[in-house]
Image (cartoon, rainbow, N blue to C red; front, side, top):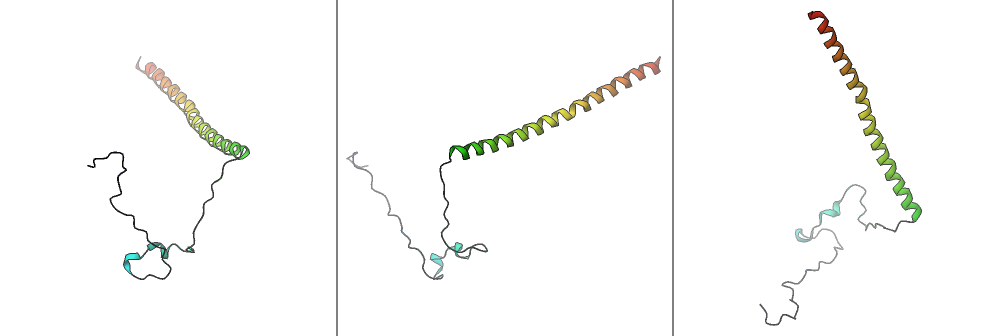
Length: 106
């Protein structure tokens, strides 16, 4: 360890700066597989623009999220409500079978 703790630690290695490739594939050590990219790839830099949302666009995004959540909730409640008549029918049929079975045994 160093004796002076106020001094920052020097990096253990220097970063390697690799210049951009201006020609065709020269050797295997600097070959980049992205040269032969997907079909329609032009080899140019792609930019992604990110901007702040205005109050109107934020309201539209929140409205879209609310619509999606409402559709999911309606579908879930509908799936639950479908089973209420089915369970009621099973209970009625079971009660009728028990009632008729009791009359036959006597």
